Length: 226
Image (cartoon, rainbow, N blue to C red; front, side):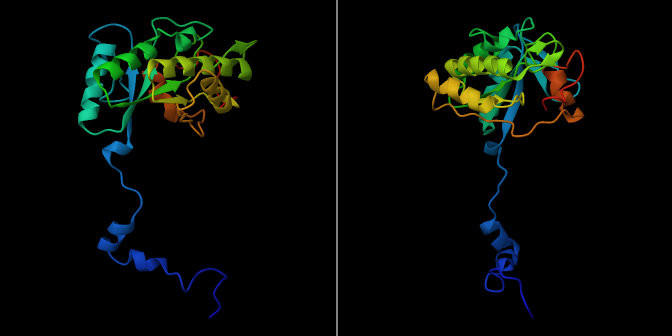
């Protein structure tokens, strides 16, 4: 027999697959509650729990309800939460995203105060905050890239300043990770990690999140940048 040039037959991986006790010993991936991040959708008001029809069991939560939900997540051993914000009002410049007193910024401060030890990540995208529902600045009907990154960088800084452990851009603007990294470093948040959505598509699979975050585009689609 002629084997291809490789470690076989000296290296036989089936030795470690022979039976369940052996497989259990050497398998690398275990899915535990601490491996997961719970997405949460925070909205203005008090005492609000608005069910999301496309996400059974999930709801838009006011900050007081959000804090209670986070306490429950911590008690279950869930690894952390990822916050999506629904602002009181939207505009063409996504100003609620980088407002130091915006809905996500206030939510982060409340969670850090009331539920210490829980990891908090924040969605850094403009679509929840723009009146048109796109992920950046629109000029002549087109989402422009570099100016949109400036908004994202400003938002990331305010999230980190509020206490976010991780900032998570989901917009898919070209170069946004580098832009956010540079801005965070210059602002003194060099230790704040970026959890980038490495690939995100203009797909109907995001429909439930668009309903939950009230971020459906008001014209066209996102195929030009996702």
